[in-house]
Image (cartoon, rainbow, N blue to C red; front, top):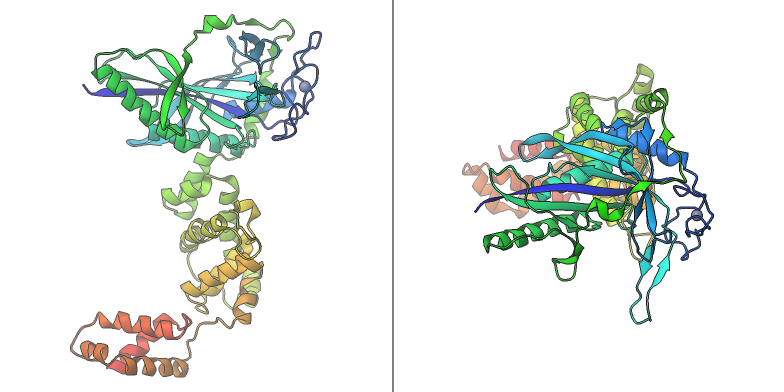
Length: 508
Ligand SMILES: [Zn+2]
């Protein structure tokens, strides 16, 4: 039997507010246990919640960016359950009237770009954390996280493979990070995923029984857990069994999912409107004000980079996956394109040449240097300054867009070759010095002087009589080898075009 996989996803995104959803306690990660608590988030009797306006604004902006309808009238509800990290015995959430509904996000699926529908996104408070320390008696509870604002974003069952789920999650995380409503830090639990999936015979309309996978905080684990679950459910069905509706956990060490609990239904939670909170009314003009101030989002920016700079879609996708990376790229391109005659003169003064290449060539070259060379260096970290290099983000890059533009400029003038330019960038990364300074200091300028080159060429030809003979017999390919030898002998500084020309002349 061939089965179709049907997947929906719930994401809990922590909103980047300074304080919690219903009290003034801070939301800093990693502080001493229970140091960010007050009577309200400890659930003490008599305390009353006050809604955090910043959290509502962030939810509205996220909803608009995700193409949702924003509800003018919002209700908060109590979701009742017992757990040690939930001191009130209920979680304040939204049930019947979520703040955002009926949105969508576009993903790159195997058959092309496709919309994934977002059913709803609602505000709720996070629970605390139970801490189980091996070798100690019992467990402890840390309530620093209790009451932190979350946006829970729920899709329709529109996803069909683990790759699509990862594409959706990455796209969603990018949007939330562009909006600066979520820091996207998966290690700290700021972006947690709960996929639910079921199988059905291919062609069947009705859904199979779904299993929910709880709190996964890495794209790789999401993919692994879904792949595992597809195999497990296929086996159960093929053996004539029934998949039971349950919540499972991804066990990293064993590489398998394990049952956590049988799935509860909504009525198990006895939702009812929270009597401590008045219904929240949002005015239309207030909502629309946020729409007009939304930043350019990743998908729009990617298609603009393709249209404006002629970049391949792949490059545009990599660059726009991070707002600051995209900004770095555009700044570096702009720094190479003179806006006026005056700028051009200034550049000629600084670098000795004016811009010659077309903007599109400059953009493609810059994209390669940002996504391959610079990201490579950032990933590796600074080897000179730290004993144990740690990878850096683009925001921590010691190379600025203007500095990278300087390297590419000098390379374009022919003063340094591609390999030398890479070396210059590396030195720049380690020392923070400008390209011109590095080239001058280390005497890296490309050798184009015919007399100097002729000397190196003669030496190489003398050492390679066999290749010279082959070339004279008509083996043209040998020329590439000889050019390579000359480049090597010159320490990468010879001008390859000139070398080619002179070699041909010498060999007749
Ligand atoms: Zn508090």
